[in-house]
Length: 91
Image (cartoon, rainbow, N blue to C red; front, side):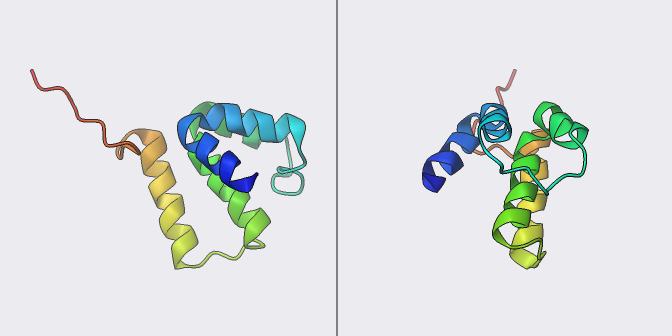
C-alpha cells in the first residue's frame, strides 16, 4: 500500500495529498494548523508530501538524505527539475 501511494504521488501529488488528508490520519501532528497543508497542496505538493514523510517515517530527524530529497522536491515543484525527463521545446 505504501508503494502505491509513493507511485501515485509522483504522478498526481495534489490528488495523493488530498486523499491522504481526507482519508487517513497522515497529516495529524505534522502541521499545527490546516492552512499549511492546504497551501502545500496548491503550491508545493511534492515538498509537502516529503516533509510529512520525514515527520512520519523518520520521526522528524533531518539527515543528509532527508534534506537532499527535500531540496530535490522543492526543485521539482518549482519546475527546475523534471521527474520524468521532459525536454524543453526549442524554437
